[in-house]
Structures are given as structure tokens and as C-alpha cells.
Image 1: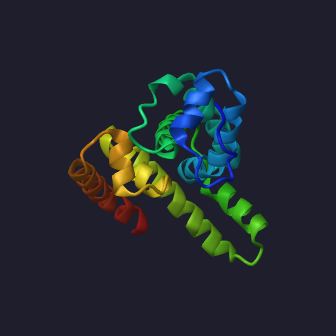
Image 2: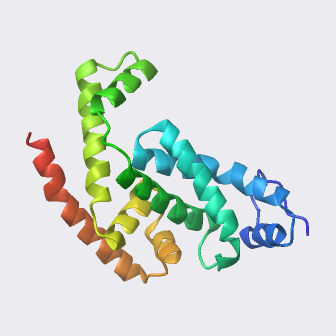
Length: 190
């Protein structure tokens, strides 16, 4: 079975999965190359550390390879991968030691020396507060919020990915954001 190269716009996800399942493991490399930037960005938004995001991105592709037969093709392959990655990222976030926002601020300043030190610290603290608040949500809300905002999926893609009706996704997103609002507002008052 021949599948187009990753840079061809018409790559068929089902054909790609079929080729991998048929033993054409090099086709999985196409998937990895095509989806790594998106999966990595989502992991980085959740974890805030490049090393952790790289590790979880790799773990997500390994998990996806092992679970390839479970992909039903109902949603996009990208959304399925993001669901795996965000779950792994939140597990990693829950296990790791607390991170000092000042460390992130130093990294931000190193990446962009024009950034004012005070702004870098405030931005790092805000990112940590958002990640911690989202990580503290109940699973059904956390998953929807993460896929929508960290993964960049549309509501329809979140519904396809999670197997939930679109109205349930909207409700879970609204409830998740409602739960985040007071937590984040309290953090802003400090």
C-alpha cells in the first residue's frame, strides 16, 4: 500500500494507519514528522518545560503506535494524538516537583532579551497558575479545556476526539472555564 508523502496535502489518515498496521513502519515516520510540531506545542503549553514536553511528545507517539489498532477513524488522527498527548502531559504534570516560575522567567529573558524582567516573571507566574488550575479540573472538563486551548482543536474536533456530543463538549468547556475563573482570579489578586 502506498501513501503519499507527509507534505502532500491529501494524506489520508486511514490509509496511513492501514499502511502502518500492514507492516510499513516507515509510514509511521511520516505521521511522526507531520504531527510532532502540533503535539509538542500542546505538551509545552501544558508542561511549560521543553525537556518534559519533548519527553511526553515521544511517549505520546510510542503510546499511539502501540494503540494504533484502537484508532477508529471517527475523528482526525491529529485529534486522537493530541488526546493521548494531553493525558500523558497532565499525568507528568501531576507527578513532577513544583517548578519555580522564576526559572521560566530566566529562560524567557534568555530567549528574548528585550523582555522586561518584571514582565517575564509575571508572565511565567500566570502560565504556571493556568497550568495548575487546568490540571486541577475534573477529568471530563480538563480534557475538553486542554484539547480546545492547549491542543487548538475546534469544538467539533474535540467532540469527535472524545466521542461526546457537541453540546456535551460545549457544556464541559463552559463548566471547566467557570471553575477556572475564580481560581485564576484569586491568583491575580495576590
